[in-house]
Length: 266
Image (cartoon, rainbow, N blue to C red; front, side, top):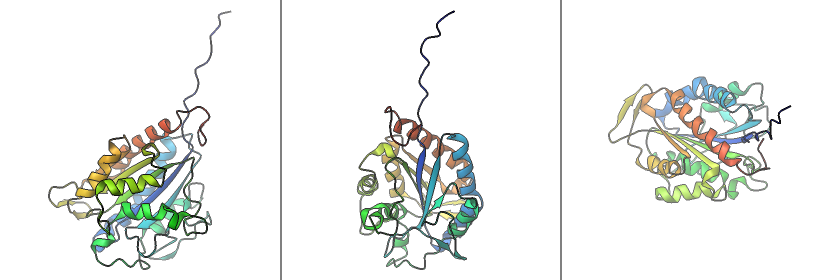
């Protein structure tokens, strides 16, 4: 009988994702918000589970793109309370009503925001960072318990203008700020940005979008580590953009689990 030799170890993959969507809630984003509930999220959820079969769960927090005065995850949409099955301020992939929950909260209600100008409503990446910093994520805070040490953070920023942090920060400063919520580890954060490709205003299925210079710069810093994807909002076909993001998430999941016995891997 021939000895087949030792079997090859199975490649580990991550089991958990923490996903945050921040959506510009300016009036020009109405069509994009409708698409989130009807097509963007359902497609994203289906493909996550199909392409990462070892994924045990993912959770999703939704924000508008203004961090002031509150950066707590939304639990209601324009139509009222969303009643998440999770009992938390985020949705859980194990919910039996996940698509309905996202359709509800995806209809962004930003009545509790108080940004000083229209531009201040367009800082999705900065708002994600604010929501996950100790001020909002620490013990007893609105978003406490969302961010897990054994999960990859997936940040999704959607705007038809540009990242306009207030007070002003450079692309590098915004990048560093988001990384800091995961201990500065670029391998544990994936950024999907959806915005205008420039250099001029573009026209697409959802209307117009201006040149998202800073949004692209921030995304390129993540892309330098293989963790950033920028998608042209005027191209439509968000599913194609999500496909590119999912390939990046899959790579991040594999890299996350290169250590034998890494927590959150299988």
